[in-house]
Image (cartoon, rainbow, N blue to C red; front, side, top):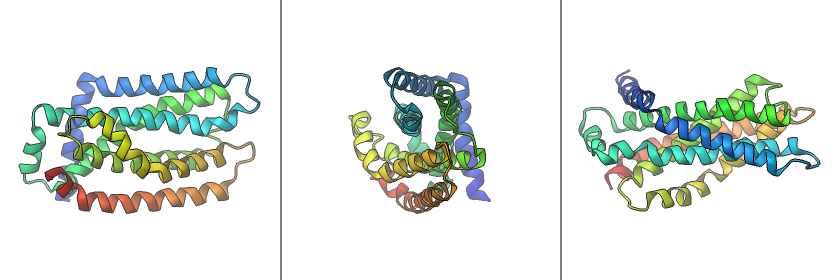
Amino acid sequence: MEFFRHAAAVCAKDLRIELRSREIVYTMVFFAAMVVLIFSFAFIGDGNPRALVPGMLWVAVLLSGTLGLSRAFDRERDQDTLRGLLLSPAPRGAIFAGKAVAMVALMAAVEAVAAPLCWFLFDAPLFAHPIYMVLVLVLGTVGFATVGSVFAAMLLRVRARDVLLPVVLYPIIVPLLIAATKATAALAAPVPDLADAVFWIKFLAVFDAAFLVAAMWTFESLVIE
């Protein structure tokens, strides 16, 4: 319970600051909306634009999430508050969990705009099976935030961190992106393939569990190094 209390305190701190400034979430939402709109104009007249919706959605989430990750640890760098967090009695894993959960909340706000926008512009049946679709979004977001938070913290003091973050992050999350896109495509098909969607959902769950354990194990050493 002490672990969860510390993690909730870190998460609440980040979200409280963001609610006051709204600089990260507004930037992420605007960027995701612009990506979807550009795709919609680019594929006007295409034979089957609905088939492209899963890729559009996850590219928008991926790019806006990367934008948010590059800014999520800036406050810790500018005021050197990460050192204070590491010196606090809170477990290092709780600090990581709090930062990751805050990132999940910001990405959820992005998806709450991007997914309905894809549905509106392309009339894609993304929510024909809402429980499965929400599960795909949650698992994909948790996996991205878990891996991304580790690398964002690791590159905190690197001068070219904005350039290096996508370089080191994207190769790791390629399986996550493929699985999330495949699951979304199976659910958004004219005849939804629930068996295929469940397979990719299980893949996402295993990916999240494996990288969550690895992140909790390596976060302290990566940040200290």
